Image (cartoon, rainbow, N blue to C red; front, top):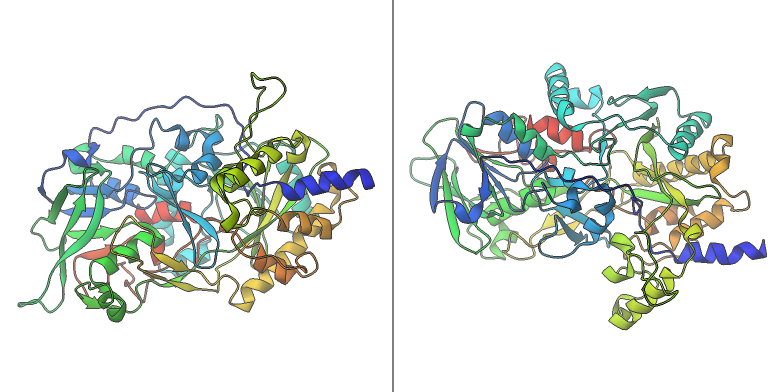
Length: 573
C-alpha cells in the first residue's frame, strides 16, 4: 500500500479537466465552399432582406437554410468559418481549443459569477463546433410539454441526423460502463438510439468514425444559394426599432453591425408584413443583444444610458446551467480514447456518462537536448492557461506557472490512465440571471447560475454520485479499477482537479453534498434569459414588440434530454 501513495499523490496533482482525452489520428480538413458566404468587410453599407438572422450557430444555421427556400435571408455570424480549421474539425484539438483564449479562438471563455469556468462559441456552427459531440433527442414528453408538434419535431430531427449524426463504436472502457450501469439497475438496455428513454443507451455522435466533427454549419448545404447571404466576422451592435407615431408597439426593422475593420454596416427588413429579425445568438448573446438594443429591465438599461425601447424585466432572468460533477477513476489497464457515448438515464433525475483516455494531454516527445522532454499541453485547465489549482491566482507568475508545468511534465504516463464517470442534473431547478458589464457586444456579460441553490438539484447530485460508486464497484468495471482505491480516496483525488475557482473544504471526501458544491463544473448546457412565457410567446415572438423573434437555447425553461444540441438544431429547422 505504501508504494501506491506516490501514485495517488501524482493523480491528485494532475491538472486535467473533464474531456482532456483526445488523441485520435488527425483527419484531413474537407473544405466546404458555400458560394453565399463572404467576410463582412465585403458587405455593402446598406442592404435589405426578408429575414435577418443574428447568430450562425446551432439554431441559426438550420433556421437560415430553411427560410432561404422561400425568402431572402441574411445570416450574420460574429466568428469565422469552421472549415479548414483544425481546432474545430480535428477531435484531437478539442481541449486545446477550449484553452485557447486568443481573440481568434472559436471558443470564448467566460467565468460565471459562481466561479465556474465556461465557454461560448464564436464560430459558424456555434456550440456544435466546440462541444463534446454527444447527439440525443429530447423525450416525447418534453416535446409535447413545450407545445411542439411531435411528428414535425421527429421529421426535423431526422433532417438534422441525415447530415451530422453518427453511430459510435464502443471500446472496452465504454462497454464496461454500459454493462456496469445495467448491473446496478439502470435498466433496460436500450442499445443504440437517438431517443431519450429511461435506462442505459448508446447515443449518437457528431464525430464520424475518422474523428472528424460535423457541425450545424453543415446544415447550410440545404440552403438555396440564391436565397441567402452569409457574412462572417459580422459583429451585431444592436437592433433598430421604429418607435412612436401611429404604432402601438415598437417594430424591429434593421440591425447595425461592424466588420473586422471596425466599419459600420446596416441591414434593414424589406417591406412586408411577415418579415422579421430573428435572434439566434445563444443563451448569453440573445438576452445581451436585447438589452443593448433597449429591451430589458428599465433601471438596469438606464444605468448604462441605453435608450429604453421596452421595459421587459424578464430579459436575462431564468439563466441556468446543468451542474455536472465527475469522479476520476484511475485504471490498471489501458483504456481507449473516448468522449461521451453511453448514458444512464435514471428515474431520480440524474444522467450518468463517462469519458476515457490513455493520455490526458498531448503526447510529449524526446527533445533534442538529451533526456529532458518538453511539457505536455494540459488543455483547458493547464498551468499554461493559468488555472492550476495548486498555484493561487495572485501567485500565478510566469515563473511559477513554468515550474508547475515542468513538474507535471515529469509525471509518468501511467498517471494519466483512466477515465471520468460523471453525473449531471436534470433541469436544473436552480436558476440565476444575466446582466450587462458594458456596452460592447463582444464582451461577456455577467452571468450567475446559482448552482445547487435549489435542494432538489443537490439531492439529485448526491444520488448520482452514489450510483457512480456502485458502478465503480461493479463486476463489469473491475478490469478498470484498483481494488485498494476507496471511494473516499477517489473523491479526494478528484477534488484536487482545478475544475473551477471555488475553495475546497476538508470534508469534500466525506460529504457528498459538499463535494457536489465544491467540484461543480459546467457541461456547457447553459440556457434561459429569453424564456417562453416570460420574454417570448409560444411562437418565439418577443413580447411587446413586433417583427422580432428569438430561436435558440435562451428560450428553454429546462435543458432538453441529456444533451441539448440535437434539439436546438431541430428547433432551428
